[in-house]
Length: 319
Image 1 (cartoon, rainbow, N blue to C red):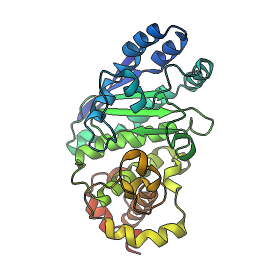
Image 2 (image 1 turned 135 degrees about the vertical axis):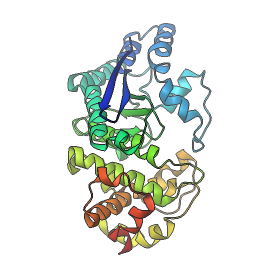
Image 3 (image 1 turned 90 degrees about the horizontal axis):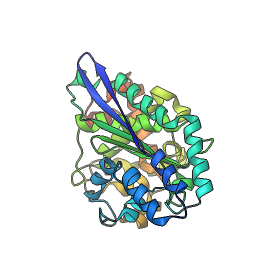
Image 4 (image 1 turned 120 degrees about the vertical axis):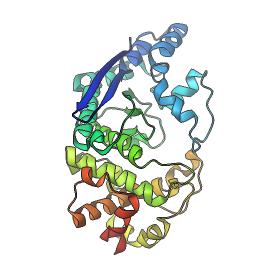
């Protein structure tokens, strides 16, 4: 019930195996078995949880995870992955999956990854990517922050070899999910070129990672396709906070307070520092956009520059 479609992205100087894992079919099958709890568990294990192994296994070792999850506890894994509840409203879940199917959203995610690799040309820069698994799942709308702060969609692409897109489809986010997928595909390349380590990453490196990915997505799909995190903080608030952000560029340790702001501190297990929602995404995009304008480079070209060079060359941060 879960299809895996393998596409090989090929260029003269390399190739990347892209595996599209259709978990939506498995989620549909689970919901259609409503009323038979044992059958639902059996279907979920085979067509949802196991196919998602490339996505949840890296998360189990994430030092920033607020709680450890038993890999044999499928309900806990589903919660960690923000999946639509297996025992959720059947009619509503099937309706939402139908929206993805009619919009061909998973296929659009596939095209976004291939377009990203076409533009970045990782092989030409000596980057040898592992096979990349890509999926789109129907999310639990009760996931903290998903509907009110993230417009119902987000992605995870920081682990080599996996791009995990989650959404509750709406008129607003369906056209924007491919752009967010390109953002995550950029992470696959950028974080192979300049790897990050949770213990040593600086705030400045994180700002460049996210700012470059957003600028790159804008090059592919237009700035109107970007998510709310890119414009979450007003110009006046950014101007007020810029001295604090500038001072934090070389700060190591946990950078999440400077990325997500205070709202996610309690649920994610970090200490708030008095910053607004998604400050790092808004500021990171401004920082990178300023560097691109000053240098004349595209986001794709700047993807091969060290993060400190981008920070040092950003007039926005220096002002």
